[in-house]
Image (cartoon, rainbow, N blue to C red; front, side, top):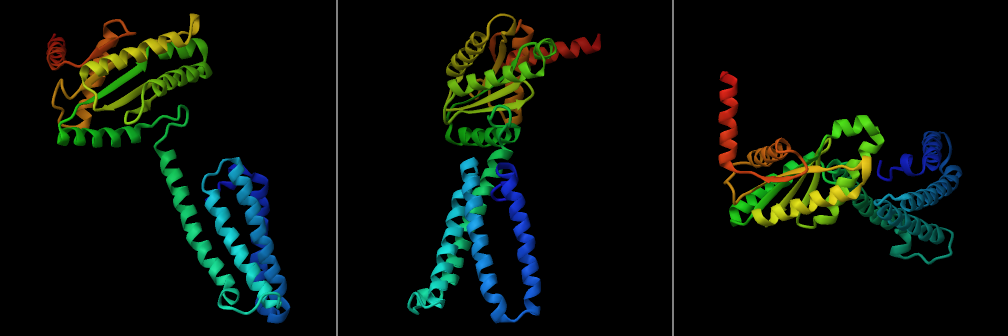
Amino acid sequence: MILRAADFTPQLDRVAKGLQLVFVGSLLLTPLVGYAQIIVPLTFMIMACVVFMLVLGTASMISGSRPARFYLLAWGFFLAGSIVFLLKTFGTLPHTFFTHHGWQLGSLVEMVLLSMTLSSRMNELKHQSRTDSLTLLGNRRLFDDKLRNELAVAKHLRRPLSLLVLDIDHFKAYNDRHGHVQGDEAIKIVANSLRRHTRKPYTACRFGGEEFTVILPGVDEPEAARLAERLRASVQEALAGDLAITISVGYASLSQASFESAEKMFEAADFALYSAKQAGRNRVMGFRERRSEDAAVAGEDAARV
C-alpha cells in the first residue's frame, strides 16, 4: 500500500508476502519452544526481514515511489538500533543506556519516519485523486474546488478573475475518422498547449472528454481574451493536414458580471463557448450578459412556436 510494491516491484512484493507468512508461522511456534532456543533464530529472522525491507524500499524508490525515501530511512534506523543492541548483547559494545535500548530507540525513530511515509503516500493519493490520468492536468474535482475558492478570494479582495472554457471542434467526427488512439493524442496536444501558455497561479484542468478549463486569478477580460487567442492559435498550429485540430474558446470575467457562484461563472463561460461554436468554431468569444438574455428570450419564443 505505502510503497505500491505490487506496481513497481511485483516479484519482490511476492517475496515479501512469503516472508510475512514465514514470520507469522514462527511467532505461532514460539509458545511451543523455549526462549533460549527461539530468541537467536528469531532475532536473525527479524534482521533478515529488515534487510529485505531495505532492498524492497530501494527498488521501489528507484522505480518511482516517492514515499519510499522515508520508508528506507525508517527501516535503516531500526536496523542500526537492532545491530547496536545485538553487539551489546554479544559483548562487542559496552553496556550503556543507548546500547541497552538501541532496539527501542531504533523502533521509536522508525515509527516516526513510517508515519511520515504514510503521510507522503496520502498526499500522493490526494494528488492522484485531483489529477487527470491522460493529460496530467487537474481534473473536475480540482476544478470545482479551485474555482469556488478563487471566486471567493477575488470577491473578498476585489481583484480580477477570469475563466476559460474550451473544447476540441468536431471531436466525435475526428475520433471516428482517426480512432481513439489519435483522439487521445489530440487531447494531449491541447493539454500540452495549456501547459506551455499557463503558469502559476493559473490552473488548467481537463473538465471531461474533450473539454478543458483554465482558471485565471488576477486576469481581467482583455488579458483573458489575449490568452485565449494564443491558445487557439497554438493548437491550430500543432498538427497539419488531415490530423489538424482546432478549438473553440469561451471566457467569462468578473469585470463582465458579478457572478453569485462558481457554477454561474462556469455557465457564463460555457455559454460563450456555445456562442463560439454557433459562430463557426475555431474562434474565441467572451460572455456578455445582454447576449445571454437575448438567447434565453429567443429560446422561449422558439418553444412557444
